[in-house]
Each structure stands twice: as structure tokens, then as C-alpha cells.
Image (cartoon, rainbow, N blue to C red):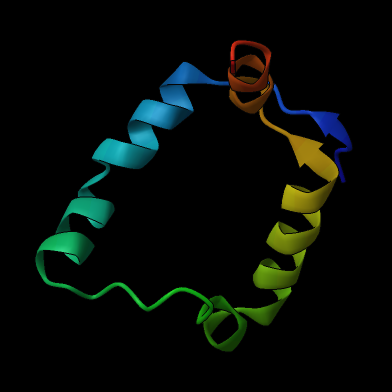
Amino acid sequence: MKIGIRKPSLNKSIAARTSLKRIIKTKLKLNAPRGYGWLTDPKKALYNRIYNRTTVSIWTLIKKMFKN
């Protein structure tokens, strides 16, 4: 499990937003509401919850630096 600053990947960011699976799910309105991850895949949901609380995005840090 990673702790600290996440290393950004431009390729993964673009791929996640333009994948065929994502396009189909959004067009057909098949996305589950927020919080349903616990029902669909509890192990992955727990991992993601811990990961997101123990790591920080570099973009968040940059936004905080330039915030007035």
C-alpha cells in the first residue's frame, strides 16, 4: 500500500476518461450511484478507501500552493 504523494500518469488519466467501457456505461446510464462499491466489490472498495486517505495527488498540492 502506498503512502504519500501519488506519481501522476498522463497516459492512465487519458485512458480512464476515453475507454470504450466508460463511454458505453455512461451512454446507457449503467453507472451505479456513489457508495454502491461496497455492494458490488467490498474488497476493492476497502482498498480504495484506505489508498485515497493515505495518498495525496500532486495536482491537489499544486492547487493549494496557488490558492489565494
